[in-house]
Length: 282
Ligand SMILES: C[S@@+](CC[C@H](N)C(=O)[O-])C[C@H]1O[C@@H](n2cnc3c(N)ncnc32)[C@H](O)[C@@H]1O
Image (cartoon, rainbow, N blue to C red; front, side, top):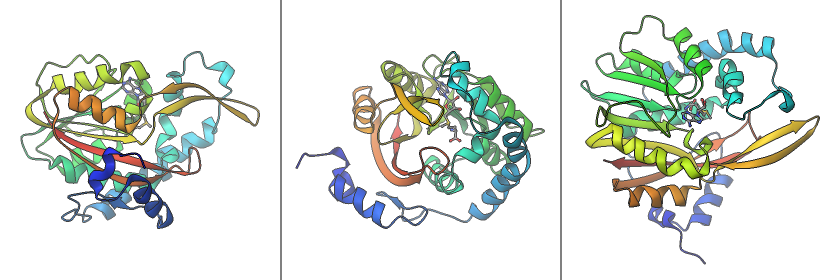
């Protein structure tokens, strides 16, 4: 049996994966330091999420419809602009809840933190964090202008949240400006040859002895085209988790701590995937 770095979970990777898959009932988390994880904020976060999904998101979904002909899309990255208004419905609420609990647990947000989120999408986690941690400043960034506009629409009047457009492969922020940086469920959409540049940028903009939390899929993703009922993969995106972790080690991230949970991709591929969280120091 091949040796997988995920052995640090104390279980061989395949055993861990099949155990989690078999016991899947919505969401599970396995990691080294999950003992003190707090779910106390979850009911309120869920209420906030549902108000958005049942309000502007459902309305947009009804207006725009679920799919667009691939032939009208010139560049794959444009799909994020199209999905911006209803991404919160494509991602499952179970993933949202699990990810929110994990992110806040691992980021250990403090008053003076300057927190950066990359590939923030609709900015739901970040808006709720900014409402909850009022003395912490948050910067929400995404490649897609429309994602930023969606965040603006749900975060009006929140003073400690800044929204900006940024490509994580080449960031416009000053070196060492942020105390903590996270990237949830987005690095897998960067071009494979740009993943290392993105990690380098994350390290650059996060101050020394700062914290970084990445949530990635076990594998990279694929661009897909859909013509009628036929769906075809056209190009790979991102990198697999093992490659990302090795890159982080080589770039000098310290104290790399992985944990994992099963994400349900109900609105996407219709199956489950292993999502890996990497907590690291800079
Ligand atoms: C799957 S969505 C996740 C959004 C959000 N983090 C969440 O968890 O709800 C992926 C996001 O990554 C963004 N993205 C893709 N490539 C990017 C890049 N190179 N730089 C910044 N954002 C990017 C997309 O625009 C999209 O909003």
